[in-house]
Image 1 (tube, rainbow, N blue to C red):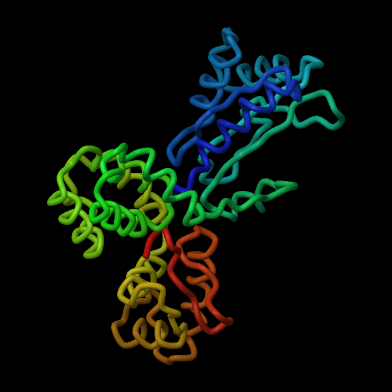
Image 2: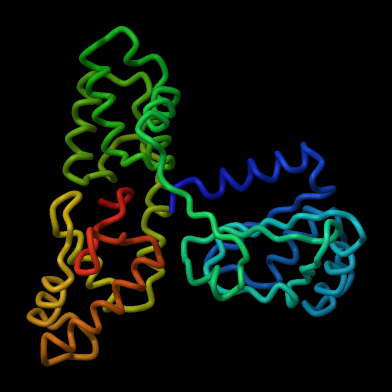
Length: 294
């Protein structure tokens, strides 16, 4: 989380409405614990629709009729964690220029496959230039007249790993702070002590941790922890991960041979990749940590 999915999709909604591509644009944040009724109620509020029925099936019919009204309607479902039954919610999928279209965001790539998404657009972290420009905007004029502070600020920005949510939180926390505060913060970031930074937005941690916390597999969490022990930007050998998991008895299935451990670890790695917690390495025998987490 934190790569900017919500901000991007909000801007997309604003732009397509402004350009006249859709008559109505409504958005609901789904999140990992939302249910059908909650989504229905949020969409109804956005549509200025009073739901008369008390049961979700009736609400679904009311929403479906409202969204399938001959106009060009766009429904944005943000932060989807698992497959949703759009029909159960009351979201019609129609063909042609008029009708209802759906855009969704998720940090779990399995969602796109499970929901038969036609077009999938991965969002990458910011470029170095974009990251620095955003950081300067959030930190204000602190480093304008101080070359030394400018250099430290640039180093702090690099530690944010080009992740918008971290750049915004850290930049805002350091606005108008002293050289000592900047130097101290840089040291904390380099040591991974993000929670020790004064005035940091606590919501930052929820975003960064949620992908990990929502892993259902203990094996996946164990493998992810092992990857965290490798040096920054390291190519992590899958064979070495399998060896550690076997030696430390970290895998729930209790494999007794390296061959069995290797099979389990490779399966777990695929899960971590779909959750955007790991990236492909230089070849099939390696993986690496995502920049936003390293």
